[in-house]
Image 1 (cartoon, rainbow, N blue to C red):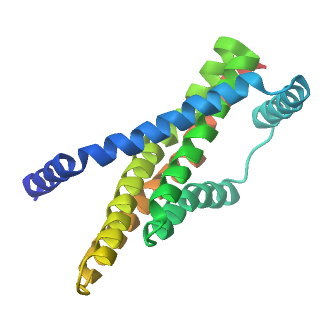
Image 2 (cartoon, rainbow, N blue to C red):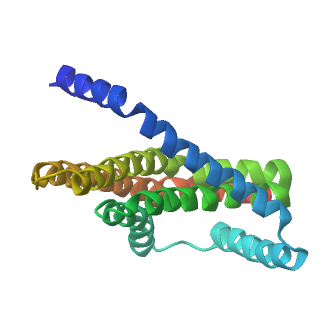
Length: 210
């Protein structure tokens, strides 16, 4: 079983490497532009965000968080992007929209990291590392894989439209849906990490940063 899974993954990477690279480039572009945007925001905007950040750090270091409500929120936030990518992949015009969704995820990530580094230098980098990295180890690969799956299925829809005949794509739809469900489970696991592991790192870092 393990060997079979390894072979399937290896073959998939061999066939879809160009899409994986393409989606990864869009994600990295989003991170780059997000980090750049964090550097050029106005002083008033930076002061407002900085005040919110320090208020958050004060609250985190002194107030317990409701784990149940936080888990629901984090799981929803992580699932939202994958559900959007899945729905966009079902449409013929989904290719640019999927890439835009991936870019937006990267932009948010880059802006968050860029702003923290801008405001607190090394301490900001440290806080970004402990607050963003743990759950994104699962979320980012899931978003890339979801983007690749959506582009593949959307491309299949485009090819089907321009080909003669009406070949059924039900089987491909089932595979696409199953793959996205698995990725949703991965992001659900990321929600557990963000709820029960990341806050421990954040509280530890907050005592150093404040």
